[in-house]
Length: 230
Image 1 (tube, one colour):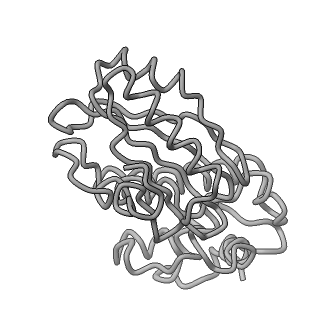
Image 2 (cartoon, rainbow, N blue to C red):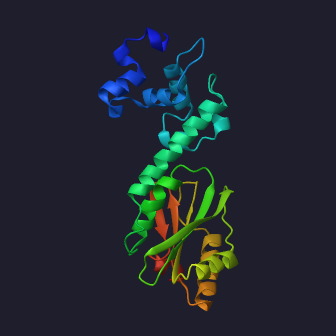
Image 3 (cartoon, helix red, strand yellow):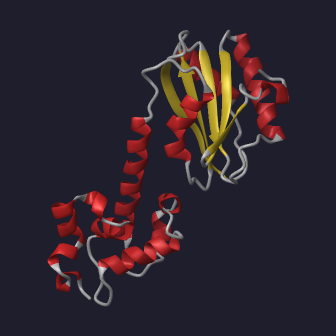
C-alpha cells in the first residue's frame, strides 16, 4: 500500500502533526526522515527493513555508516545521510542534557553520564580528554583519537601540550571498549601510569581514566586498590 492510499490519520507525517511525535513508533519516525519509498515499497516498509538490519536497536542503528544503510533497497546517499544526521542530533541532545560543564567534577559518574550518549554503541574506540581548572570545573575537552577496534594509543606529549595551553590543573582521560567489557587491559594500565607520571612533571594532575562500555564504566580513581596508580 502506498502512503497516499493509507487513512490520512495513519500517515506518519499527518499522525505526528495531529497526535505528536511520541505517538509514532520507531519505524514511523524513521519513515519521516527517509521521506519517500520506491515504486514497489512504501517508505514505512523500507524503514522497517532498516530497523530489522539493526536488530530493531536504535543503538545499533546509530552506529551504522551511510554505506551500511545503503544495503537496503530504496535507501540512497541522501536518505542514508539524513538518518545519520538525525541519529547524531539525538546523541547530542542527550549529551547536552547531561553536560556537567557548569558544575565541579567530583566523581567518575558525572563524566560517564556526559560521555555515555556519545560512546554508546560505537563499533570503534575513541579517546577523549577533559581539561579542568584548580576548582575541578571543565574548561575544555577534545577528541584525541578515533577509529581503532581494540586499542587506543595515547600521545602523552600532545595531551600535556594542550593542557599547558589551556592552563589546566587537572585532566581526565576517557575512552571506550566496543567489546562490552569495561575492565582495563595491561596496555590501559601501562599508558595510564605513563601519562600520570608525565603530567606530574608539569604539576598537572591526572584525576582519572574512565573506560566506558555501553551502560557500564570503569574508573581508575575509584578502583585505585586494583592497580596502585591513584
